[in-house]
Image 1: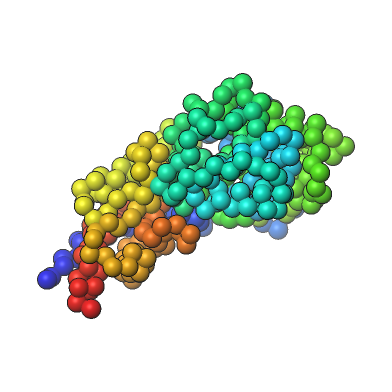
Image 2 (image 1 turned 90 degrees about the horizontal axis):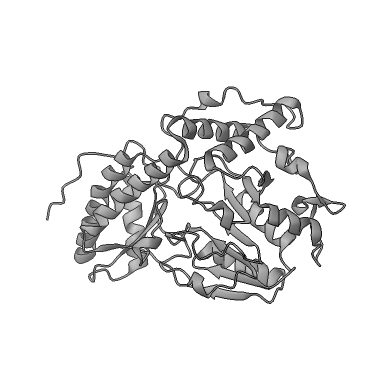
Length: 383
């Protein structure tokens, strides 16, 4: 059987789920204004860092009384900073439906040793938020980067909750409409939807979270890198661009360029629309093929950024080996890089559809997935 090679190719084959594709037309020349070799504590460095905070606030529509800080360790650092500093004051519920959420469970149960209620759902599903006690502190991911499952909205989170909501939103921010009034702590990293560089995390605190920080002292020691208060008061400088450790001013400039691009195309509505269009290109293809499915069971919870797919053809003998072979074929052809499923997730593909990805590239990739599938099925039959 002759398997016809698709005519069109993605102009940009980068579909990695982190670090993610740079903004369209990106060039290193865009970073020429970075204050390299200057102290981040100098006026120019502080101004750049403060601009990153305020532009983030403007695009995401974050309330004026919420604090926004740039912290070390990417999204992981931001989440752990929040958990180590805030948890322990009241009961805790941990919600997990993918590998990163499971990692936060490990931190809280095995490292902080809190007697937390753990609610889990398998890959492709989400926990029942109606069962969650929001009078306890609740930790969860908004979008499961490794499972392609997201929280559809914040309706189940009560406005009169007594506990804090701590939300890892790293593959959701800038691509999904986050209900700030329902979120007390929100974290994300630059290298997801905006295609920034690594190592920096964003930590967003509601007034309720600040009140907790100033009224509660954890029973465990806090390393310097996690400390957000001094003398029982919030260290305001952290939320004005005075970072705890030395940031990369090149990475800061790169984030500012991405924010300026996002603003220029229409801000958050346009960024969400781009992600939605990319997801639609994938889902339309999936819906037309009997041998591949979205890992997310409920259409209402399907991610529009980290789209996870599974092969369902009964002829596939070894699902993990088959998926690896597909990803390898696509990479060898130079049409898709880094789209294998996350190592802890079910075998399949993971296609990043965040705002920096062009829909034309996603659409061009789909026939190549079919080409690779048919080629691998033929190879398996011939073996």
